[in-house]
Structures are given as C-alpha cells and as structure tokens.
Image (cartoon, rainbow, N blue to C red):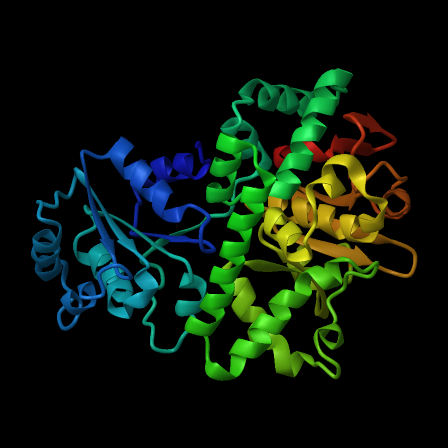
Length: 429
C-alpha cells in the first residue's frame, strides 16, 4: 500500500544535508514496513537491526560507540558488508538501547556518508527520560501517522476519485452528485476502519468490519500493555484511566478536556504526566485554545484550556463500540458522539499535513480549528451533517481573515468568504 512518507524518505536520502533519521510514531502505523520498503526500492542493500527481537544487540553499543568500531560488529551480526553508499542501516525499536541513540551523534560527526534510519514506537517518551543523551542537532526527525483518507482510497484502488477530489477542491466546483455520494460512502468506511495499515489491508482484502474491529481491539490492548511496560508504576493506572476516558469526553457537547470527568476530584497536578505520556507515545494529541486571534498564534495559547483527540478515528470507534450501521446507515442515538468523532477525523488530517492547529472560543462563538495558511489566519468549523456554520459567520464579521472553511457533508463551494469542503476532502487542506 502506498504511503506518503515514501516521498519524504526519498527526499531525505537525496538531501545534501542529510543526517541520521529518527522516524517517530505510534505503534502499528507502519514505520518498520515503510523503512524496509524504502530500503529495498532505493538501496542495493538493507542492514536491519531490531533491538526488541535481538536484545543482545545492546551489547554492541557498550563501551566505545565510534562508527569505526560499530560497523564491523554490525556487519558480523547481519552477515553482510555495510557500504556507505549502497546500504541503508535500520535501527528498529531504538528506544530500547539508549547508547544506540547516542551513537547517531558520532555517525553524523565522524561518518556522515552512512545512511542510517531509526524507528521506535515510544521514542517520544524515551527521549524525554533523563538517562537518554539525545543527539540534539545531529539527527533529522520525521513523524509518521496512520494512513489518511487519500491513502485509504488509493489502497482501495480509487486513484481516479482522489484526483477528482483534488481538482474540485482547488476549483471550488461541486462534484457530480454520483461521485460526491460515492466519496461520502468511502468516507464513512474510513471512519469505521481508520488508518492503521494492518486494519486497512485486511479490510481491502475482505471488506469485513468484524475483522477490522478485532484488529482494532488487539491494537488497543497493545497500547494498554505499553502503558504498563514503558511507564512508571505510579503512572500506569492514571494513564490507562485517562486513555479510556478520552472517547467519553468527545461525546460531550463541551469537548474542552476536564480532569474531573476522568475521576472525581481529578486535577491537572494528578494527571498531567499521564496526559503527556499519551501525547508523546503518539496515540493521542492535545489541541490548545488560543485567547486572541493574532500572529504568532502560539504566543496566545491558553495554559489551561485544551481538547484531546485520539490518533486514529477507527480506534476511536472501537473504543466507543460504534457499530457499522451506526455510521453507514446513520443512527441518531449517536449524534452527540458523532460531532466529536468528526472533529477527531479533521484533527487527524490537519496534523498529518503538518499544520500547527488551535481552537478559539469566546462568549459568542467557538471555532473548532484555527491555523495559519501562508500569511492568513484561517478559521475552520466542522459539522457532521450540513447545519449552518453560525460561529464561522460571526468570526468572519469580526476578524479580517480573507476566508473561512466549513467542513460538512455538502458539496464543494465558495460563497460569502466561506469555502465549503466535503468531509472526504479534508486531506486536501
């Protein structure tokens, strides 16, 4: 299955200023597969080392970690010569070997000709531990996420539909109704399946929502296991409690995160470390509120008000035990949750595309997402159906943004400074 990260990896390989690469992302988003496919397609040879499968690799990095010493030892492990120009060296689950992470500094300084790419499911957590000597300034870093809706369509063999969506997005011209309805149907499938590659692959092969839910449940269990394996004893219960509460808060009309909803009497001082663990692991993200519509947006973020979203919308459906017909046919009983589910989907795709995003609220309006595009501050209001975007209209009357975006189930359009984008076209923003 095509992954957009492939283009970024190729650009890294060809960069004149290439450094050892760290590929971060939650468990099961496809980091290892993407690195191996990249290696096989762009290099004559791949030398793959996994610190979880082969714990004895750690001993190689004890003592001197000069590349002149490490390369012969690594060659003895993989049984092949490692060439500076022709071999991609992959260190997988590198968070299990702090000295291997530190060695990247010396590869950068003493042997930059080697192509080294590393990955780890919990690197965000690992590099924030005191025992890690992180090679600041000596590595390139990339974030990897689950598959977005475009990648999902491509996996289903719908490349022509992707091209059509992009064309109508750029021209603000409605799609012909049969194609619009078709794209909305695929969007509903994506909401249930999500973007975890294993889940997507099995769904493409079988079209089975029950199998998709089984795979999602096993992934949730692996996340919970990580919370026990890679966490302090005092934080395990709090992290699990917090994670299991995220979907509950998204079902509320006021989605501002409230610690007291996690546990009676809950406070930031009790749960903030657990919340940071979830964000650093890549399985959740925090959307901060801004108090003023001014550049730079980051300077006006609130210290206390934020929302929390799950990294994959299919996982979110599994957490809430949403059934296929709830989405495919439409169950009014889940309307309260549907709003949070749709926002979660949009949040994912804006992050996937590298946007720095916030939200804004005052006495009169709440704007779901605020981001900067070029020199403009762009407000985005999200609707799970086609209700009026009242807050967006108020915002455009009050502030000088050249346009705003309404995301809903309506077709493409542009009127009264509002660009309407169907839910299936969010990947174009």
